[in-house]
Length: 386
Image (cartoon, rainbow, N blue to C red):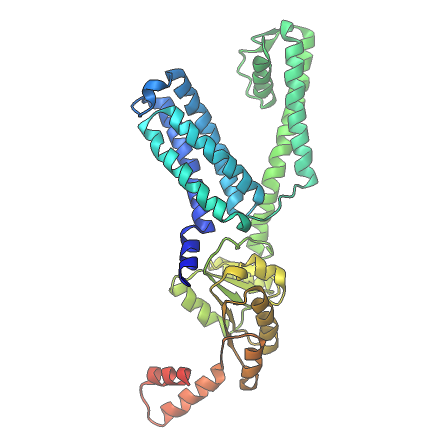
């Protein structure tokens, strides 16, 4: 029974939930497009569903796929709003798959149903709160306001337009005009309607530009921050059974290479932003922060790490980092390296399960090798057992 819990968490872990939701989103897009283009009606329910309804389900399924893909992205970043959106959209994709009545849509139904338990089990893991900047709120208000203004104005002036007779026509004209597409099938015929169209173009281009800026601006800034090694809030808390390396120094370099060669997932927490930039260039996952602070360790997922390593050149800093890590994850295995052999017991009292002294091990190896013992690897193994 002791091993059953971790196995279940691995099978239905957060990564599994995110992957299943993303796969359902991609499959919803694919099946929607396939049903629109091919219009297959060979599914088990095809004889009970009108073709027009199946085609409509194909269009809406494609749209739902885009929405689900967006929510899966937020889910991957650990946002609670992404969890709510994904849980709400998955039943819709399953119903749309049934309504499409095609053999293409059967895998979508199965995948949507299988994704829900994984999401429900990991509810507590998606706990990041969504916060919007002033610019993002202003962009949303301006975009919605422009659409409402254009739709209401075009409908009120519908007698002075060609191709605008209903609210749907007015919304269509608003989106086509505000986005500067302008198909021409809905066009103003009077001076008043043309002036309204001009105002809609001005407001539309401004609101769309503001909306794009609010979305792309933070992404570009984050990209520069990552390149310069100044990111401090990268989200690694969806990692499971990984290794967290506290700090980085001369002792850390060889063990990081060993972890990398062993294809082990690990995150390095270091306060040195320049060193972090160098490590990121080598495709290592690095979080800039003080290893003895709770916030960066929580962001690195130390609470569900399988092992924690503290092996810098400063035993005092390692001790503080070990104390914090032990408090956040009492069950993790913590390994430390002591630069001073006198600090071995101190690091154990701080919470380390195993403390090694590279200087002590190296000294014994040198002496025993000098005395004629040729198999250094066997010597090292015996020393480790001691």
